Length: 212
Image 1: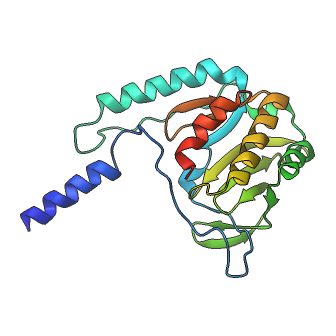
Image 2 (image 1 turned 45 degrees about the horizontal axis):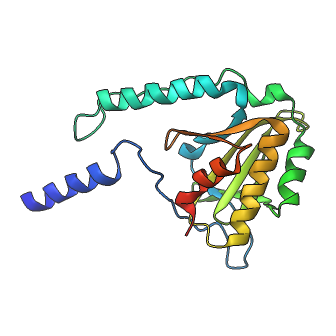
């Protein structure tokens, strides 16, 4: 019994509560038996990987440094003794007044498929103000403002590995297009990394852990 308890503690330390040093690839079934693309996400995924205005670069780097320091100072070897709540970004995406039809057109031009349903924590819902585009393993969500004409936030979920060259190229080109035309950067709060979407080498760096 003692041996089993020790093993369980070691597993928890290794896979659950260790500081975020590398992306952990998550897996989920984002399609039905008929092949319909239905993106899956849970509440904790929201804005964990987000596209935000480049003006936030210094603020995001400082926030990520604070989180790293906080994690180191509050990790007792078994778990975290306190919770860090990150601040909201200073320059919101909606302040750019990006048109929804422009952003969605960019994604569709690069082969992203638009979903009409989502799988939220195991329950299927019709799409409302959060427009999902992508593939069974990679989805970009375009959340719109109340009038639906302007973009409020852009965030993404990755569930699974990118298996095909054509898909990696489509994702790279779509992110690069958005980065160069709208001055957006990608903040990954899971791995505490910031990526310049106007630099394809940085996009490759983001995708490398999801590439098989």
